[in-house]
Amino acid sequence: MQPQSFYRAVADDFSAVDEIIKKQLTSRVPLVSKIGDYITSAGGKRLRPLLVLLCGKALGREGDDLRLLAATIEFLHTATLLHDDVVDMSGMRRGRSTANALWGNAPSVLVGDFLYSRSFEMMVELGSMPVMQILSKATRVIAEGEVLQLSRVRDASTTEEVYMEVIRGKTAMLFEASTHSAAALAQATDEQREALRTFGDHLGVAFQLVDDLLDYKGDSQTLGKNVGDDLAEGKPTLPLIYTMREGTAEQAALVRQAIQKGGLEDLEQIRVAVEESGALQYTAELARDYVKRAIACLEVLPASEYRDALVELSEFAVARTHLSLIHI
Image 1: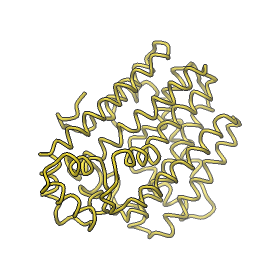
Image 2: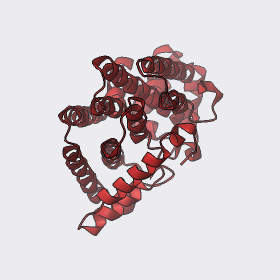
Image 3: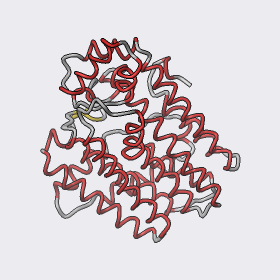
């Protein structure tokens, strides 16, 4: 875990969340616990539970229920990762082999189901109907986002509008659910709830934009996953969509063909095309704009170290690499 100040602000709570996660992974079926422990101990940034803790504490909420909500969000996220890696046939995540690469698809899907089920048990334990409404809707929207993305694989006609709908569903929704549910649990004002919901959405969009940019600009060590994965799967992400729309005829044809056939044989040419067409710059600037708008939403919160940490976390989310292109 990196010792950024936004982690330090809730360090004790974070340790308690880790303990809840370990405890809730217990199952009478050993393989469930084994795979669950493997994926939760993989060293992810845990940004979503961090958002729950920071938003809750910024609103003056303390206690075990906030920590339980943070752990619940992490379980939902982990379930989506297990399922995503099977759908995408990914072999690497967070710098090591995926669960499906080690144990196969069937156990990964079923343990993902277990984590979803456990998260709903944890929600019931919280006993907050507003939180239940937010998180149950989020799980549906995330599933719809994943199916929409799947339906657009190798579809070079995908527009920026459809792409934004995909990332709002599959990524931004859980960021939004994290911040919105924390506000609901803290019994915040309607204005604060709506502002934090919007904050989560904007931050999640920015996070995914950077992720998609890094598929062409990063390296496997920085990413913790294979470079070019999106291209290999024929996913029309924003750098590709922009290049087809704004690049030269040759660049557009190259990208269109690469999306339609999938694979990595044209990766280096594609990386040059998305750079030269201005697609990476455009994607980075859009991410930067979303972060600025996200930070503006935090003005509804009283001044505190937690609000400051949320601002810093927002900046970190889009400056996750050494790339000067996206530093804020």
